[in-house]
Image (cartoon, rainbow, N blue to C red; front, side, top):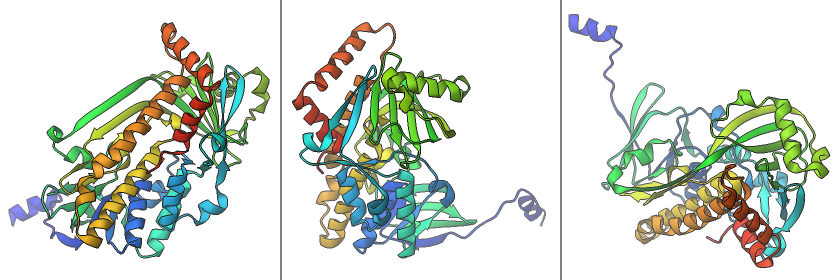
Length: 409
């Protein structure tokens, strides 16, 4: 009795483990995990999504919003594109500004007819969750102590807690779509993985403002004071970025300084295009390139930010995650349709081929548009020559347009 009172006093509880069963357990309810669940649901394959945050938090995360055509088509296959088709903006070009001189790149012309679609990742997430839950898909929000286990065997499980219950989710496969800081990649023995990383010597200061954007298309501005990006989300709001130092704090960037710097980097001729408005969000984003090899271990498969990161300059993070899901969903569907594991075994190799090409493009665009350190005059001269060549060569513009609108799957 005394022992019982002691354990009770420290809130010790012996709980019976609940057991659930699904075919594919998905960790992470970002666009990657949600799109995978939708595609598998449409193929008659059962899934359970486990998400650490609550639904409101997930549906309010503000992220990128430039979609390749392949990403739009994939969301269509997932039956989650109704609002996208009616509300998204089609962009057939981008603008590049060099010290205030703007030049439009006709993406449609130089890519053979392709374009990009601007539709916020927040809206994509809302659409995916609404469709999936309405059709009976299972998403467990606020799942805590999530732990993938036994994925090197044929009987992997995911252990988690929800509403005070401890549950073991038995599945055939685990999809790790839980982001860069998630549990899935770190659960794989480090000796089984290789990591490739590039940290950049600058960050982005980003704002979301209640003000119309300066252009109907994105402007990428390279200026002697540093890079700037002018975009929209949605059309009535401006999503604006400034290159800043890695040790930047928001205290160093009051609103007045931000607006003045945005005008300066857009150039004297177009400074009047900047319209001030209430800044409703402000943050600093470090710049990094990161790739994990391989993207699978046993029956655990990594996708999206769990496997790779790109600097945001080329708008590839979300698109790269969705291309992973294209390959992974096809591999799962092939297995359940035919019993073949061929596509599952080749998933990492297939996905990484496209990932490294996209990493190269994001690195190139980042290096070309951002000012190097004050002392690195050679690199600054090289990147200016690169920009000059790009804007004077149809071959170079075709390469930019092909990569920006999205390489084929």
